[in-house]
Structure formats: structure tokens, C-alpha cells
Image 1 (cartoon, protein in one colour):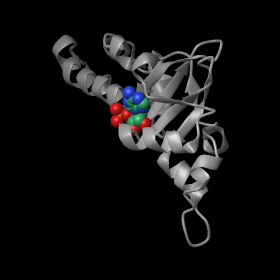
Image 2 (cartoon, protein in one colour):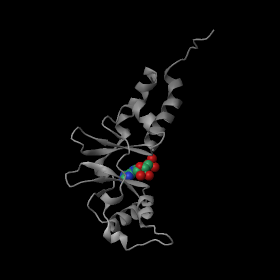
Image 3 (cartoon, helix red, strand yellow):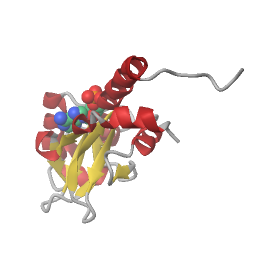
Image 4 (cartoon, protein in one colour):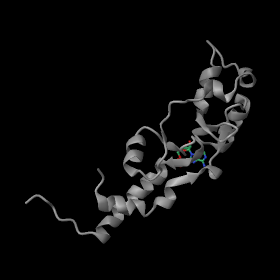
Length: 156
Ligand code: AMP
């Protein structure tokens, strides 16, 4: 459990936790890999979110996932970019959260993920929580805590 005063201070920055879906680069599950390759290259994000036509969250896609699929024994077959869709190569097992303000859960999952997708109860994509924003919050709290509270050691 996170100590309650620390948690309270972190939650003061709760409005910064989630980047809303409207500001997040996404691709459609039915897009050609050609298009997805372009988006990933131009936006320079390591991984992006995949949604369907009803804005349901469907998975995540990285350049490495695409190039891995294009790889043949001794060459990269770029013709496959037009033949395959995002659905053929995306990752579907990345952790997804419903509560962007559960700091305990976020910290635990973000040891292995640079961002977490947030969905509502209908599985619609709401936004992402990034490791960068969470680290900024942790840093802010560690620096500000001593200005607000006096810590007394339990040990004698
Ligand atoms: P950051 O912690 O800001 O470096 O973001 C970590 C990862 O989250 C990036 O490498 C991207 O995969 C993803 N990401 C962050 N911001 C966005 C965004 N606006 N649109 C899409 N993906 C993003």
C-alpha cells in the first residue's frame, strides 16, 4: 500500500495522468500495414494504439512488430506491407486499465510498459497513462513531501 499522504499528493496531479484519446495517435485495425508503417515512422512513437470503427480498443502496434512480419530468410519483403493489415501483426495481450488514477496498479504495471491504455466499461479507448507523466508525479511528490510534512522515524 502507498502511504496515504504520499498518495494524496500524487493525486493532486491527477489531471496530468491521462493523455485523452483525442490527443493520442491511433491506427484502425483494418488499416493496411503500409499506412501503419507510415504513421509509426512519422509520429516517431515506439508503439501506438489500435482501435476499430467504433473506437473499441483492439491492441498495440510497433515498428518492430511490422518488420518482424516482413522478415524472410535473407531479406525483408516490403510487398507484404500492402498484403497484410494491422490486425495481422498487432499485439493483443498488453495490459489495459479502466481506472487511470489507481497509482498502485499503474506503478506495478509500468515497470514493464512505457504506457497503459485506458478503456471504459464498453472497452472503448479513453486515453493513455504514460511512464513519463507518472515519473514526473513521483518526482514532484518526492521533492515536495518534506515541504508539507515532517517525518518522524518509528525506530528508536
Ligand atoms: P512517453 O512516456 O511520453 O515517452 O511515452 C511513452 C510511449 O507512449 C511512447 O513511446 C508512445 O508509444 C506512447 N505515446 C505517448 N504519447 C503518445 C501520443 N500522443 N500518441 C500515441 N502514443 C503516445
